[in-house]
Image 1 (spheres, rainbow, N blue to C red):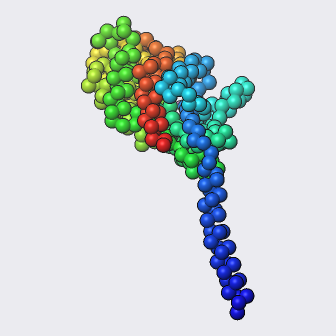
Image 2 (cartoon, helix red, strand yellow):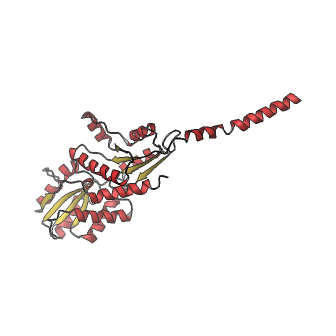
Image 3 (spheres, protein in one colour):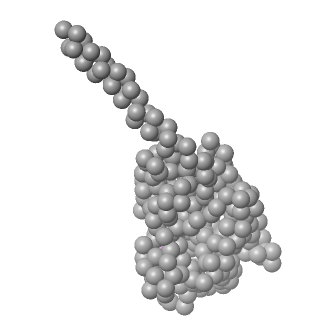
Length: 295
Ligand code: CO
């Protein structure tokens, strides 16, 4: 009788001391000091000028959030592969976060450098959120909005566009921006942007390569307004392949050729949005806003 009671007591004692053990272990793991980091995620580009834009963004980020380590990743696998052939290694967002995890980062803001919350953005969102709250991993991962997310962003982007139009452009001359466009529902952002641009300056238009509005819609608008000279500008972070070929290239189906066939003179401006501080400031503001929610 006595031995049975003693045994029961022992089991009870073991339970009392064993139950809190996992909690104690977890608390032990939590002793890591808070380490905050930033991961900048762009679609990516192989043109050398892109690096100038990305360096400019990094400088602005470091100025706004001094002392916070900054990492980079691209979402385009095609571009990552092309870069690898040239001997340059660029990480995917998942690879970069795995590295940050090994380096004991506990809190990370992933800042999207995309233009709209489209397919590239949502694909990234899905992957990076898996890194938040892993055992012995990053405790919190927050994602900063791309260039246009809220209605206020769209308005601000429209105002930024007006500011970066070459000064020599006369009011009756047109400005045609080439956006990328997407099959994702976020393609509507380009129409929203066109609405704001029309309010600010009725001779400024935005079209897309892969979405709506298309160049034929823009051509009709230009004809309606009897515009004979336009500035062609990319509305993409980098003046890469689309800007150089589909917008300003000599091929028959480039926007330049299409408009020139209609007797509209074209003046291409090969500068991506990431080269202008007006747009960089918007991305950095989105980053700062996400960063303020880290703790
Ligand atoms: Co493309």
